[in-house]
Length: 435
Image 1: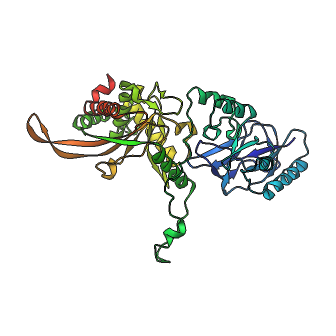
Image 2: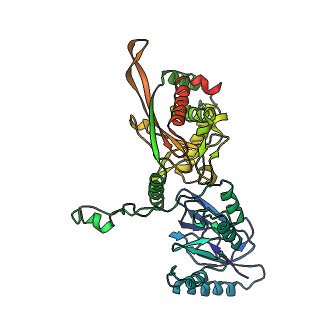
Image 3: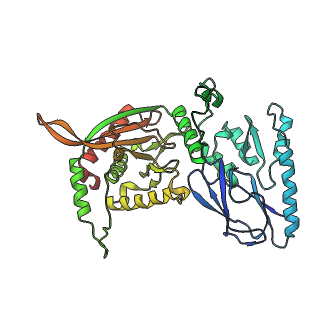
């Protein structure tokens, strides 16, 4: 029987993707593990590999197509020994019901089978809830009902994002649930037509949003609506840090071309300081879930990196145990591949906290928006000469402001102050990072 190849969900935030390139062509033989296509997601360009053996019978979605929804049929794979032409024509006919299907009326239970019939054969049968499709196995549905868990809030780990039994078990035992839909009664944004009516026609041009900007906008709104933020700010004297940085960089060995093995930045010190502080204040190294708190063993620090059209937060895993030079070289590699959209999903998904640094742009102080599933994010401004009082005397020092944004559900005021105090101690006494 032919296999339907669907647009995969390559990241938890992915709803649509751009089919940038078909590596295999119609009629090509395919083996498990072969790269079929390249998909551009909201964060990176990734390869889609074959699971089954056969022949690529029909390409449904041509390369260069943008905004292809997750789980949409993109190609037909004929199995070993199957008639390729028959498989291709069968796939084409399977598309017809989807095109003719009418929108489901969720107020009538009898409409659910019609909606399910419009799904490609290899896709799991969906549940219909609040007008949205939720792909789940029958066992997962039963377990969710017994445990009173809202299926729409469970992240599926099965094929094509399908919710399976292990996802329900994870949710029951403390696994993260997706944020609930925005509560009724929230202010409705002005429509596009109303906004445009405020400006003289012809006085502006419309720049369409790309996938990255759409995802960033959606996640920021969700973060501010579902996470109760509060903010704490301290000033850090960084003269000792700057001296240590100079000494460390001067000690870097050089290759035959005179290139140093590392060049540590102030931000590398900040990453290390946050990582060590999270270990010293472990109750702040957490993630909120509806079932229970996830208390992390390691400090996996995301670092905001600007890319064309938005930003991404590649993660330095186990940053508490890495040297400053290792963090520096790892960040250079991650940032370079982030800008080239070559990061793997595991390199930018998850993490336990994050750093956002705008000091290089002359920003003195700012507050960052928490990036779920994190409970904290540290915003760092520029180091600048300021007058401080030390031992009763006014003197000049290099001062850097740091603001901790905190999820009040997971980290309360005192705990946040303890974490920020530990960060300040590390930054002002960098030798403490290696003790």
